[in-house]
Image (cartoon, rainbow, N blue to C red; front, side, top):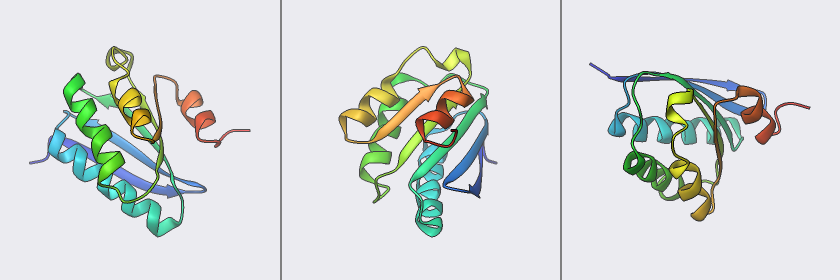
Length: 122
């Protein structure tokens, strides 16, 4: 049984993902690769992830690993905003590592800030 559930929806100009449940690194990696495939199919490069319902904290090393997946395994230049709950704002490792690897990524606890970062709000 899956710990982490990530639903994807293609919207105008981006892929919208909703993540719920307990964090699992393997399932998160698979979800990122699914996001990249959805972006390629829709001819977009922006992903808005609503991860506010993740019930567990995501550790610093897992954030580093996810940034590496985004940069090295997606085979595309994704722009991503990850909206997390306040409890998961304790580290910007995902954002910092991704940016160091050339990926435009924002972690925030504000859906509006994530949408603005991706150019989805005027």
